[in-house]
Length: 353
Image (tube, rainbow, N blue to C red; front, side, top):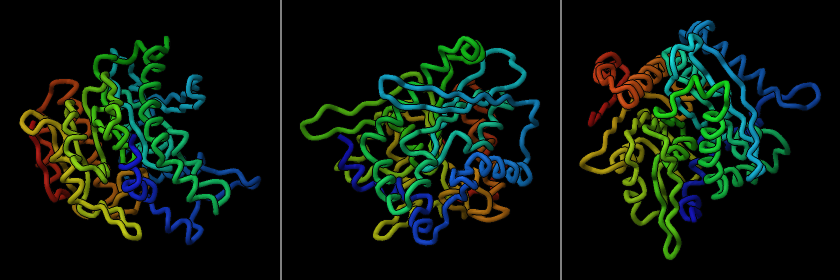
């Protein structure tokens, strides 16, 4: 059903984190003495480096909860990490985050911790079919693993992971009272942004086939970071026109995906912003940072500029918080003030709020 889109978009999604470079240079994550990945240690080291480069909330302000669920119907594990406000004052609005290809629940901690310190719960999913496990195993089989990770089946599994995780966390007797089930949003980066678009209402129509509609009705707002476009469609605007929730699009001038024979850059991110939602009634905003890179919005430091990278991260998390305050809390003042605060970092900012 989604195969025609995926045939064109697969390289965009699969190689957006520099897979070709890794495959050709051996630039893969290190392994432990027994040949096991040291990914958890790497995530911890990355978060420690982030804390040195970017002011992070005090540990006393944030509670982290690891969740290891299993969807028996799909025979699929769905790990997650939940950042919660430590003060526990009242039910917190909930943001569900979907990582890019090859990521994990440990990623985008600069967003999760910040949101939790400011009163939001942030649930970071790990999509087993397209997570960090891709980088391990037989290297000659990497391309096959990546193709599976961008398959039609995995695209649909990722959206179902999101729905399943919402079901489970809202049914958890210890966690549900701390979450506001009426105020839920979703956010994602790269492949994760496509996942969120589908969950927010993007629909794909195939000739002679039923409409592919994976909308999750509990989502009331969506943040789309470095979202790849929908390729190979006769009417791509019809796909995202059905998105009826407010959206925030975040990108950068050099947020480029480059692979042999294919390039996706800022122009396509702008076009996706234009196409999302009803042309007359859509509530949406677009922030375009200067410079940057496609992976600048992950927990990685240095990419996009040693000084520019943490400054953009700080501005991005402030923007996300202001957007959620406006869409889930009815407080638009911070969103209106945000562009002026970060004018020096911005190439463009547009908003219909």
